Image (cartoon, rainbow, N blue to C red; front, side):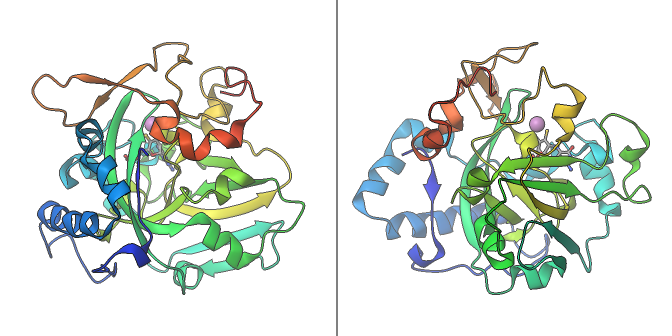
Amino acid sequence: MGYVFLKRKDLTMAHRWTNTLTRADVTPEPLWLNRRQVIAGALGAGAMASIASPALAETLEPNTWEHITSYNNFYEFGTDKEDPAANAHRLNTSGWEIEVDGLVDAPGRYSLTSLLEGLSEEERIYRFRCVEAWSMVVPWNGVELKDILDKVGVQSGAKYVAFETANRPDEMPGLRYPVLDWPYREGLRLDEALHPLTLMATGIYGKPIPNQNGAPIRLVVPWKYGFKSIKSIVRITLTDQEPATSWNMANAREYGFYSNVNPTVSHPRWSQASERKIGGGLFNRRQPTLMFNGYEAEVADLYKGMDLTTYF
Ligand SMILES: Nc1nc2c(c(=O)[nH]1)N[C@H]1C(S)=C(S)[C@@H](COP(=O)(O)O)O[C@H]1N2
Ligand SMILES: [Mo]
């Protein structure tokens, strides 16, 4: 329970994401809500029962396209929430390539197209919880990271996956400021990376992902704080060492490597027990934060025996 998790094959009316759609083609939300009814109709009785629960229906009501694409963290384009939407058009996402290296069978510089070729696009409605205690619900389109890793062949010695964002000072005005040790870097333990919830997103609401949200491809790890979900990825490295990650390097006391959403472990400067859902209406009531952001049943096993206050 706690998330809508749909394989493409479960859809009666499969919507194929295509990069020919542009922002101008459709008003996304009504289209999405329509499709969601179709999706709900295709699910079994058990799944319907959980969707029908009022509390869950409320938390999983997706944010609007406007919320998702105008309130962003993407420090390469500035540190204000409005900066990415204003500046990220400068990022040239055409001919995108990703360097895959380290402990893989087929290292190399892949075009994004070739890396995604043959993999099945899915739609996932996920809660998204920023470490700053705000949240959204986002309807992503993407492929499981596992499918990409299977394609390049993870070698037996690999224990972690490291990611890097593009580092292009001419296109990213925020790189002038030493807010973080650029390029933006993130990482996952291999079992986290292979988990079926871990997505590489290329779209939102069935449209290509806007630059401010991490075009043309970004990570989405829904049970971790948002900063783990690194944007505009140009490098994926399989390694046997826990990789250095940007926020952890900036302040290890405040931002752990794991950064699993956990309402019982406070950030040194604020509580993580509740969150403000963006677009939450007139009074913008806070809602309780859920363990592992509501994905406890799916991911708790990954951390069995670990002290989550030490490995925060
Ligand atoms: N490269 C890069 N990735 C990033 C960030 C960033 O500043 N640079 N911000 C992170 C943070 S703090 C959050 S909350 C999410 C925000 O994603 P969104 O703007 O799509 O909501 O992206 C994460 N990925
Ligand atoms: Mo964040």
